[in-house]
Amino acid sequence: MRIGVLGTGVVGTTIAGKLRELGHDVLIGSRSAGDDAVPFADAAAHGELVFNCTNGAASLDALHAAGAENLSGKVLVDVSNALDFSQGPPPIVGVSIDDSLGERIQRAFPEARVVKALNTMNTNVMVDPSVIAGEHDVFVSGNDEEAKARVVELLESFGWPADRILDLGDITAARGQELYVAFWVRLMGPAGGPSFNIHVVR
Ligand SMILES: NC(=O)c1ccc[n+]([C@@H]2O[C@H](COP(=O)([O-])OP(=O)(O)OC[C@H]3O[C@@H](n4cnc5c(N)ncnc54)[C@H](OP(=O)(O)O)[C@@H]3O)[C@@H](O)[C@H]2O)c1
Image (cartoon, rainbow, N blue to C red; front, side):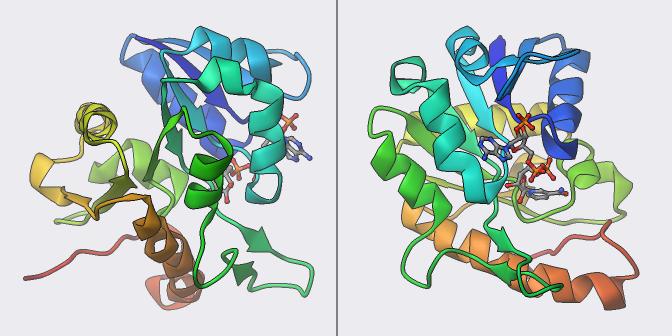
């Protein structure tokens, strides 16, 4: 598949690397072209599916630069988190208790099919769940069932077992996925670092 990965940080490059390893044709998007990056708009135009791996504070700007016309009708996997470090660590997490970046992106780009996924864990875990022993979970949300099904397929190709991919419903569930990160940053201490995840036990 042709995939555009918007973001040149550790998340964008790690996800792009994994997708290439799996045989996908990937372009990485950035504000300016660089070593292994093209402008956001070129990466988005290239992708049949697009990942948003940009800084949460700038994701809407980055996606506007990518261009609504280049996102229209496409699955847009949103991995971003809103983290405000202005008062030092730990960051203030989230945009609001009754909104989320995922929803803001869906509202700003109504023709895109936004699926929130993978934002609840460290990058190394996103693309290789086997780095953590035992069962643990990844969450998806979004308004478009077919878009979520395509993201679930991609997650399975990353190594996520089907029964560990939990569909939380429509994009308003992104509030929970994003606000959970406030807990994640505190769990990092007792967990002994960022390579951990959670598992829903029934
Ligand atoms: N690090 C993790 O393990 C982790 C885990 C879960 C979720 N996330 C989320 O994933 C996203 C990516 O994280 P990251 O650590 O890889 O990178 P990051 O440093 O948060 O973001 C880097 C990307 O954001 C773009 N960007 C920054 N300011 C911008 C602006 N003013 N306008 C347009 N684009 C701008 C950069 O563009 P240029 O390429 O032009 O510099 C770059 O591509 C974030 O939302 C983060 O919260 C991270």
